[in-house]
Amino acid sequence: MKIDPMEFRATMGCYATGIAVITTLGDQGEPVGVTVNSFTSVSLDPPLVLFCLDRNATSLAAFDAAGRFAINVLAEDQQSVSARFAAPVDDRWQGFDWYPGPVTGMPLFDGCLASMECELHAVHEGGDHQIIVGEVREVRPTRQGKPLLYFRGRYDRCA
Image (cartoon, rainbow, N blue to C red):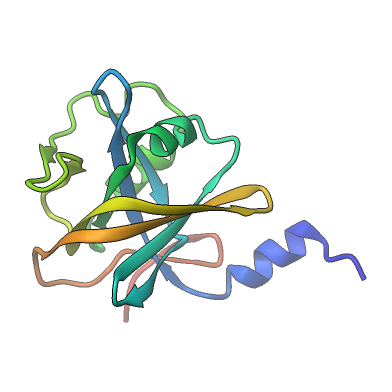
């Protein structure tokens, strides 16, 4: 039995997820970032995390080439940050403040619930996505607060 892609998407939307912006640097040193809700921990020893990136994403080549990336876990008041990095625009970094992570130099954001700096560990094929696994080199829970959530195709908040 073939599963209808839209029905599968709606079904998966019943699982609430947090939202993160994954960042790296392009081959000219320019910041690259993308909003994801496909982020999870994989292992404690070694500390591994993964995220999935669409094969058609314009940022895919930068993530493949860089060998490192950062994860910025968004707080509930950072919906505009999520929307900025989810939109297909070239100037998403214009007027946006970030700082280089102390371990990898990858772009980190102020105001996030937590951030992590990672070295590329593995890349796996995953249908129309690539599964990118990173080994965590640095962690920073940076503030108290509630996460920005995604549920049934839209932003949501914890009760």
